[in-house]
Image 1: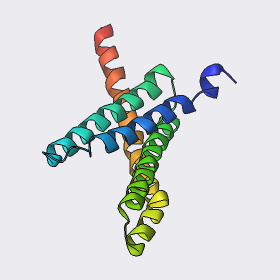
Image 2 (image 1 turned 45 degrees about the vertical axis):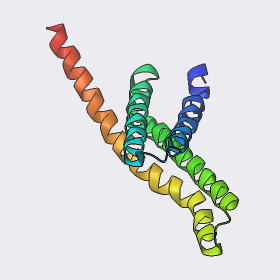
Image 3 (image 1 turned 180 degrees about the horizontal axis):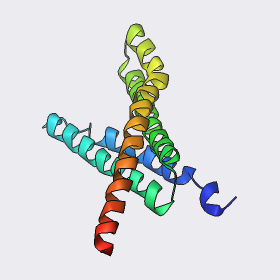
Image 4 (image 1 turned 60 degrees about the vertical axis):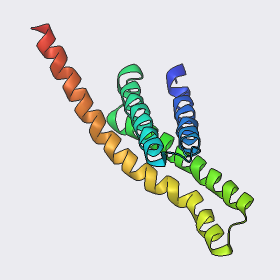
Length: 141
């Protein structure tokens, strides 16, 4: 087992925490909430695309493995946001029904985030590889 295959979880963990931080910090400003939400989505999309590129071209991961690592990071970020939402609900004294839904969010948010993230990353990884190969073929002529 090589060093690079043993440390596959490091970018996953770093990006998962990054997604969580982006989601929480960008939700703090009360003014222009829609703009901050759009900025959070844009920044997360940049990290998501960069992670796909990193997995395919720096680490040389296969399409499914790259998609799995990207989806795990997205799922970890969603789990972090669910934890943050639960902590917030506890501090504001949320009602019982709302707290039950937030407890369910600890399992549901990562699932409803990671599954689409895997599917999109799988397709994006394949398309990105094709585009780069075609570009390299054209540049070699």
